[in-house]
Structures are given as C-alpha cells and as structure tokens.
Length: 393
Ligand code: FAD
Image (cartoon, rainbow, N blue to C red):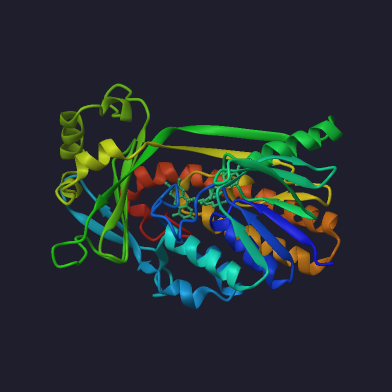
C-alpha cells in the first residue's frame, strides 16, 4: 500500500516538500491553518516579497519548477546604499553577471508551489485545518477544521512538521522525545530579537515604472536600525523598517513612534529620500502590524521513524541574510536525498537528514544575526564593497 505522509503547514517549505515527496510516488496530505491564499485576498504572511538565492534556486531546479518561477523574479544585482544626504552607490554582489539574487513575491511563489504539488496527482491540500496535537503511538494527528467548526483525527505513516517558527509540531515532537528518553539531549532555544519590523510601500510611478533603481536591493543603513526595499513586478517596492522595539537614549525605537508627527519627523530626519516616495506612509505605518523577529534552534528534529521537522519549524532565523526560505528549500533537497539513499528506512532517513542539517542551520542562524550588524552599519564602509555575497549581504 502507498505510504501516507501528512504535512502540517502549506507555506513555502511545506508546499515544496509535498512536491518532492509526490515526485517519489508517496501519497501526501497537506493541512494548512489558513485559507487558500490562491483563492482569497490574504497575505501569505511574514514579508510580502523575499530574496531568492542559489540554495533556493537549486531546490526549485531539482523540482523542475525554475522555468515557471523565473517569470516571477526580478534580479537584484547588488545593494544600493542610500545615505541621509540622498546620495547612493551600488555595491555589486559579484563581478560576474550571474552573481545576483532575486526578488520574488511570497504569495505568488507559495501559490505556484501549491499548484505544482496538486498537479502531481499525489497531493491533497486541506485549508483552514489547524494542527492541535500528535499521537505518535497511534500515528494520528488531531486537527481543528475551522471551516466546519469540528475536529478530526488524521492517520499517517510519516508526519512532517512544516508549520513555521511557532511550530506546534516541534513542541509535540520535543515533548514526546523528552517523555520517552528524559536523559537524551532535547532542547528548544528561542532567542527573541529586541528589534521588530514593519512593512511599508513605495508605489509604482504614474507611468507604472519603478521610482528607484529596479534591479537592486535598496538599503538605508543608519547604524542602530535600517530601512530596506525590494522591487515587485508591478513597479512598486516593498519597504521594511527594522528598528528596536524600545527607544534607548538618542536611539529611536518603535515605542517612540506613536503619533503622525513623530513618524513624519523620524522619516524626515533619517530617510528623507525614501519618505518622499511614500505617499501613504502614515496610513501604512499605523495600519500595518509590527512583526517580531527571533532565532529558534532545537534538537532533535525527528522522532523515531515517525516524524520530522523542516523549514522554520526546525530553524527560525532572523531575515538579515535573506536565507530562511532558501535554507528551508535546502532542507527539502536534503530530505529527498536521504530518502533516495536508504529507501524505506525512515529511521535512518530522518537521522541522516537531521545530522546533516542541524549544524548548517545553526551556522546560518549565527550568520544572519551577524549580518544585521553589517547591514545596518558597515555596508557604509567601503572595505565591504567587494565582499562575496550569498544573500542580502
Ligand atoms: P512559514 O512560511 O511560516 O509557513 C508555515 C505555514 O504553516 C503557514 O502557512 C502557517 O499558516 C501554517 N501553520 C502554522 N501553524 C499551523 C498549525 N498549527 N496547523 C497547520 N498549519 C499551520 N527568507 C529568505 O530566504 N529570503 C528572504 O528575503 C526573507 N525575508 C524575510 C523577511 C522577513 C521580514 C521575515 C519575517 C522572514 C523572511 N525570510 C526570508 C524567512 C522566510 O520567511 C521563512 O524562512 C519562510 O517563510 C519559512 O517557510 P516555512 O514554510 O517553513 O514557514
């Protein structure tokens, strides 16, 4: 009988994992808490657009999707650094034309991955289904069906937790490991960052064109904080302000931006050129939520031959290397490779996968934290100009 793999979470990584597993002929069911983003005008969550780099591209190529994805991409050839006086300079990501990263809409990419998974014929996706808990002995997961206002128990042969940084699958898995082997190394470490983010917008110009250089990742580094902007296909830029949650002395913070006058003064002082391109700045600022950031590390990532974690559920990292999704896509490739190496031996598959990925995920998490300091500060220093990049750098 065909093995059934249940995935909790139909975000970027869960959708990609479903595609890889379908390619290998498994029967896959994806349970996603939210509505179907392809049918409803809901945001895909987190950032509106993101940077796709080599790790992610490799995974999309392996899945045979890169040609379709390339329709969604805008190359970013370097970082355009904006000074307070309005001057800017482009720091190329590399010397060769192919050394670029790409801006992509999160919603469009997620939708494409869901479409591709469904088109395989081996994947069913259920929306408005929230994972509540997992019975590892009976191999059944309990979901809340928000549409029907009921609960259901879903049997599985293997379970994959792809439910993001606040993963319930992770909590369940770690509790189970601890219950079974209280002396084993079983840890979850969550380090919140004391900086938050808010998304804003530079719309397209009156003629539909881009108001800033199109093929660049724009950065306004200001020491303790920064603004960045990534281009969208419709001519707009999604702008993200990264700022401490609390002001400290002369250092601004979100808590000191409570009134329209405070926000206006802040942007006029630190980002006057960007503010001039944001006609709905105040409206956007007070409407859009402040997002929280942090690093999540845990071990182990798997339980027996039953369950495994991928993507942000296994490793939440701060976004300053632009590598969270890319790293999650790399998880999918690694898991697929392990399935190919010891087919059917799931305990070995999960063990190999976790062993290979945990050190890499921890390393990228550290690099992402370090890169925040560089991005908001030292990108202004010419000695960084030709540093080789693997992401936002
Ligand atoms: P998510 O995208 O969080 O998806 C998890 C899914 O699980 C969601 O659809 C959620 O609704 C669902 N879910 C949650 N709980 C349950 C439940 N109990 N039951 C069922 N479903 C559930 N990465 C990059 O590579 N490049 C970038 O440029 C980049 N920029 C970023 C900018 C910002 C501001 C932020 C915050 C992150 C950025 N990232 C970037 C990181 C990237 O967003 C994440 O790494 C990526 O979204 C992880 O995908 P995922 O599928 O693992 O998790």
